Length: 493
Image (cartoon, rainbow, N blue to C red):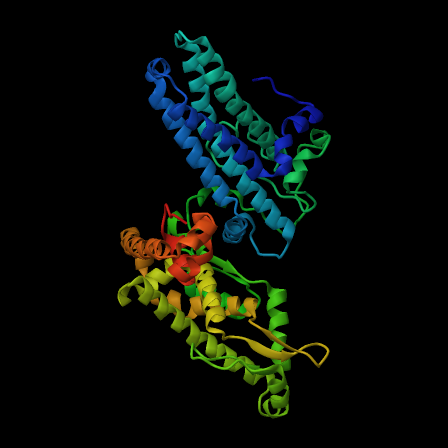
């Protein structure tokens, strides 16, 4: 298995699993690890357990390490998180910012390369040691040694790692990384960027890849790749503070995302990143030009206006309100509604008011938006009533991307200025999490009681899990569910 295939067709055939994506390959590796763990917990005889005792601790540690590392990489490969990482690291690669998808692809390709490269370095040696331990140990049950451990579990894992090694070799060629030992050394790599280079997973499957010249001059003379800075600042966080970010938002006017990160990895993941679609936002913003009225109450029961009534009001409404008037009214409503959401969430979770902003910071703009959207629909408010393109029909819509944009504004204007260094206090986050977990247990007990109190005919008509799914929003609260999904581990739903 140490033989190196140099022909492109052999390599392409060998890394075929990656044609379905990085995550597909990682899930396959995870299945091998999971199957191995299950075998160790349920498939061993007492004699088997005794024979692997000399290296059982090493075996458990290696499987646990592989499983955790794969989960971490899959998590980091999430589109939202990866996009945020590219944005954050852009200045470490290029001396000035130019909107170019190919540069983003280059950074993303290198970030993925580094993640997979470290995984290979950290994992391969351990699996090789397991192989040696099994081969050198004196087993009385050769079937268990050869098939139970080697052929069905350890060797398939090493074959997967060899596939990964071939992929990384091809990626390093595309990135023009000079270090021939990059797949065995922890030292960060120095890629070279070319304007016309293709930096996507599909590039590794290009035939005759190695026939191209190995050394190609960068074709973008206006960009200086800052390789040394990437290495020197490998563990550093961005030095931009929130005043700088807010000023950037004001001056550029087109920023459609927020990276509300803390100092550490545990408060800099996808939960602290949020974005909206700019084209959809602009389309929803244009609704105010044809607006007739707005639903802007904060939870009071109001009669839903019929379309005939709305049409009859049109002449009065449009004469007294411009598009700007409607938009300003809606913005004011959103600010009030976000405060309303904050208070409801804190009351439901029974959190002290002094934890308000640090809790919301860790809840994150994405989950806050989901809660706000749920409340808007439940309370039947936040709708824009506007004439359709034909001028006859009246549409009624909650402008989701517009709301997202103002969640980001709210984060920049209200949440971030009111949360200080406490956002980096892990002990405080754990305390808040414990309080939310206690609330989850309390509400879960009520959910069980509600199920027990159902009519026996209802309980007999459907599986228990189906009934819980149907009633969960009612019994536990839709907004509470969103909070629990963010903070509570080992949930029963």
